[in-house]
Length: 349
Image (cartoon, rainbow, N blue to C red; front, side, top):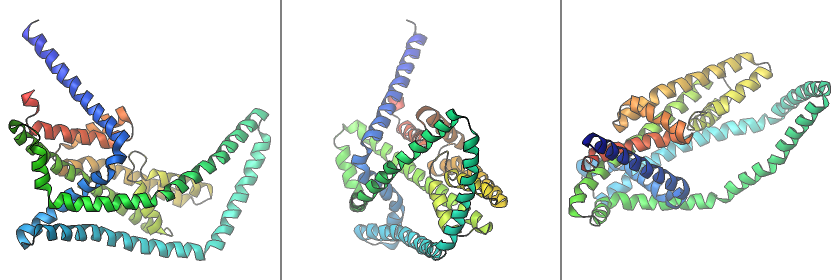
């Protein structure tokens, strides 16, 4: 076996080994993430508050523990204030819906009565086999309602568990941020001396890149939320804040995003005779989707330190190989690869 062949087999084995490790890592995350969820959240929050903590320690010169608490209060409290203001506005709009509900209920009944009459006429004209198919479809839908209600009740039952996870995450955030160097040193002492420098550099690069990833995704979410609310306000849509907020939240979901809300809404608008609103909603869906797909790779590239083209490629490969979750896992794996490369792991293979 000549040198070229040996080199080819060596590189091929390294490539296969790398992706086997990556695949195993993704499998473990997917199956056991709930066990580590509070600490994953704590890691994310620690990465976001550390820049402010460092500023307070260096510039304001306050003790580290107080700096951590202040950073947590400012960032988490600031986010809480924004959420509270949105909730207050949402409550006002919900109250308005409640006050005008009799009118909306009457309109809804007219709409349903009109379309049920049309459906009934169409149904009577169909062949028997088609009627049976429609009956089966309707029965399946009706039978699925209890399962949906059970899922809602199941989620409601988990609210205390969610609160516990949040509390543990907040406490863990304080300890991680306040004693991060001590925890890192204890972790590094498990490994041989020659590994420690590489692992330390790897941890710094990965933490920096991961914090940039979270920041980038949050910026994309805010832009999606702003465009959704601004678009609905511009179209003089009633309850623009509540509907725009719901649309923006669903915009977090890859691929479908805002279309989950806006596309069915536009279809209902066309059916009910509000063609202008239907066109406006389609335009808003198109605008938000295009803007998101243009800015997301660029923002990720700027905050994580990756080329936007490679980010886009990793998102596409992730989507094609593992589905929707791959849109997140793709850039995540690219971040891990970049951190390993900077730490010189591949040079030593």
